[in-house]
Image 1 (cartoon, one colour):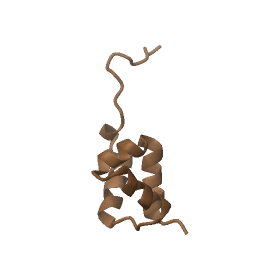
Image 2 (cartoon, helix red, strand yellow; image 1 turned 135 degrees about the vertical axis):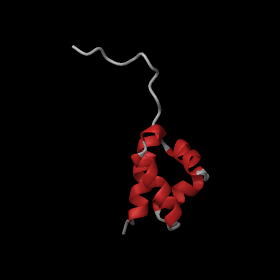
Image 3 (cartoon, helix red, strand yellow; image 1 turned 45 degrees about the horizontal axis):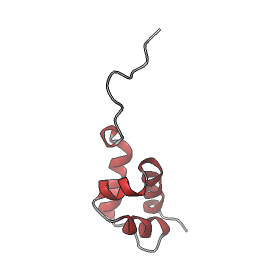
Image 4 (tube, helix red, strand yellow; image 1 turned 90 degrees about the horizontal axis):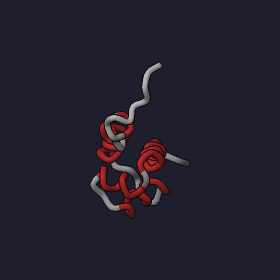
Amino acid sequence: MTTVGQQVLKQVVDNFGPEHTAALLGVSESLVEHFVNGTLPVPDSMLLKALDLLEVPHALPQQPKGNKPNAP
């Protein structure tokens, strides 16, 4: 059975990639993998950080300014 923590971390990994996810959460890629595959339970504090990453636009890679499409 997949836990909510696993599902949330998998979504973060899908959005940011494993290396960037690990850096954003302040843990190793190996630890992220253990959380996602269910080897280790996702601590509540890690789940909250992961949820924040899914909701905070500044965590996403930024587009360079000036590359906005022109409005018709």
